Image (cartoon, rainbow, N blue to C red; front, side, top):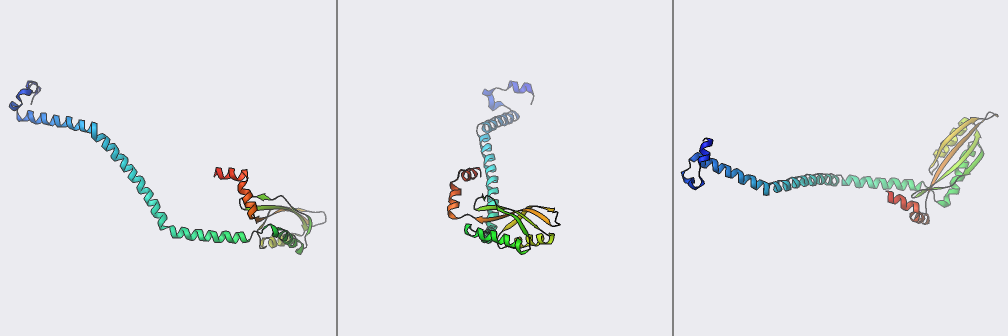
Length: 210
């Protein structure tokens, strides 16, 4: 069908049109209607469909995560039980305030038993943390090398947690060694101290940052 034939078509004489003209006209009208439908309706539906697919993918990912958590829940519970047991063991190694003097005597006795001479044994100021207090102790002892090693071993085997750090050993004019070391021990806070920690501005600030 030529362009000139298209120009000669009269809408009033549609019944006289050729079959080709009718087919092309119907096809054109169908495309116009399809385009209008897409523009006014289908496009919005496609956007909604795309949004729904994205939500489906997100929900699927959440489901898979929850499923893995549910599958591993018994293992998580066992880990929590083990952690509580470990924490309880550590807490038993922390003395309370009334037992600190006994612990300090035990540290001192560990050195005396190894024939070390104490030039200085000075507990410092306690450092308060969330549920425990740290007590640094400045120690200065004189003796032989193997005696100092035995002292460090004895401290490590105390029933309470005691660590030695910042050790500095120097030779003295009398042939003996002088060791400057910081011992650190810990105790758990009592109920009143824990309550005071929670009410302190520093504790509130730390909790807010978390």
